[in-house]
Length: 518
Image 1: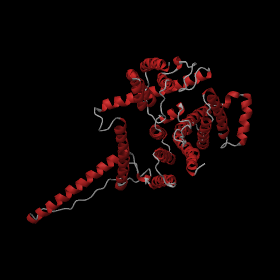
Image 2: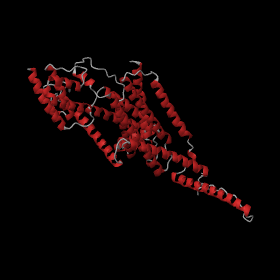
Image 3: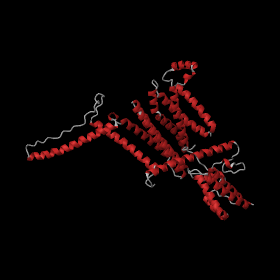
Image 4: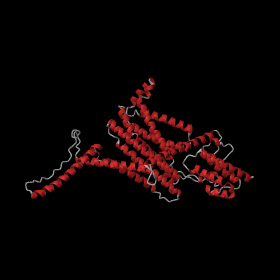
């Protein structure tokens, strides 16, 4: 294994799994805090530690199952057995704070009353664990598309497999889509974390888990940063750009420096003087009113001083500064909210609002359109929703394609796409695979008719060559080539009408090639 591949292997098998496991453990802290308030006597410290280890195991096992190509019902059975084992281990881990004697006593009681093995408390804890564990598996699947894969061409340059490799979509575009989905999930998790913290504070008034919450955002930014580097590195490899061997190490070092800076900033925040946003706003307004009153009083004092020189009976009195007094009840609570506390609290909330406003503005500009796209915000919102629906339809069609191929192969009736055979059932293929089959079948028949495609030819170049040899088929060749390019590269779903049109092109081309071969 080369040095570059070893670094990629370390990132894929160590760094990313640890980041994902730690992020999800931090994300679960508000829910654990709520359960601690709803379940008296229950402590969630063991749950967070066990969740981190289970998430790490889930990510690594997902990589192993993917490498072994385990799918279908075998995958479901494997994951089901794994979840059952983890739930049993979670049950045993819940007795770490209670001790071995309590476990023995409860085990004797379970033999008499099996229903007490899963009380309501353990049910909710297990439900939360399953949700977090399944999130780790989903993120593992998503991150597996960023793994370092050596994409070498097939050795036979005249084979269909080499042509499919040559015309495959760019890995950079695919990885940018994965990076975009990863960013969306990160910000969605952050929003859920903030909502959970708000519910925990306004419902129970308990101390908030500040460090795990900051840890989620810091670890998430490091994960996104490393994923961005992986996408850029893939592009550099494809473009044959020489990259310094130490750039990956420096990238991680700066990410660690960022994490340390965030931690120090969080520890250095003077949270002792912060008050509620509304009280801080009222305090700042009151302070501004006092400052303006002082300024007006100073101007009046100067005028009075000038008038006293003309009229000696006028007495000039200097203005007195009256700073805001402590809030009622603050002294009894042991908190002195003077003007400095109110000013710093107002500044703190102003910074928070500025960050939130900037993030919202960026989100609206990126998701609902930029200045290059015309129309009102409502039309851009509708376009964004239509884009989400288009992504859903594309994903559904891909799932149907994979399921139909897998089912047909198990029944022994479907050879590999791209190798036409007599046992191919066209009725079982989705529209996208039908179009691909018609085009690859045309390549196969054209080669038998004396018009093979050269390995370096693109679809449009091959179409031009066939048009010169078979000018009467120019409309059909153009239609079939265009349909294939759409099915091969476009992310939108291929409709059944397009597949039927491609079939008519294919039939006419097939008849002409058959006459030419005779």
